[in-house]
Image (cartoon, rainbow, N blue to C red):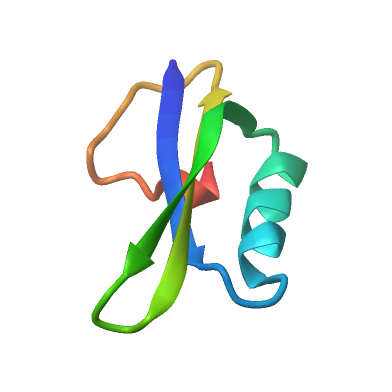
Length: 69
């Protein structure tokens, strides 16, 4: 089964980079280019990065916590 996640967060300091790095360290792979968008309400740039992961021997369940796979 292939899983998909879209990681998001503010572009402040290294927090978003650590979030993506943690996913990569758990076997997730980058999927496509990162995205940036300016949040006019908060005045903060928002980052996004899609990641995918192949998981053997499991069936997809909408209740599963993707970050724990």
